[in-house]
Image (tube, rainbow, N blue to C red; front, side):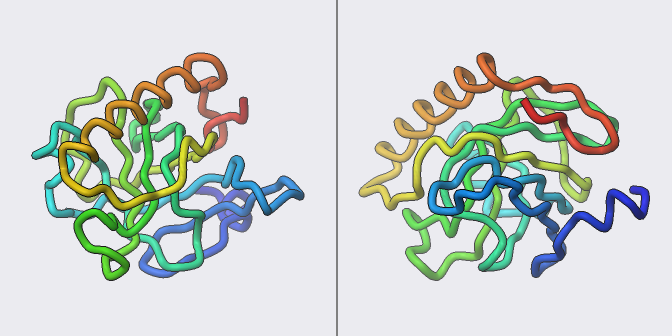
Length: 168
């Protein structure tokens, strides 16, 4: 990454980095920016539920919790649409879970452990919430992925230039 591009990133704890939001209305989460980090091993719960994710560990002050539609740029330059969850996985850990960005890459199959990803959060689908059981969570995940696909189909341009996916 060149030094000009690197200088626009804010460092956040645990090695992930985030580009600051450019819009002036901070009361409503919109396009947050680009978060980058190394894919860490998680609980493998997403895979067990049928939704494998690439996990980036976040600090507390980096991004708003919620479920997002976004784009993920892989080290080889390929860009994939994604349904992205940011939060503590309250259904399983309450408030005590580690804050993660969990990106479910749409139509992707492969091993991303240890790879450096850029994740762009474009559209907040919903806030995080705790589910009463795994069945309700899985039903909601299907709805979130469908909502992410719809939004990405209508709005996202997956071209990549200068290391950051272009804005829609």
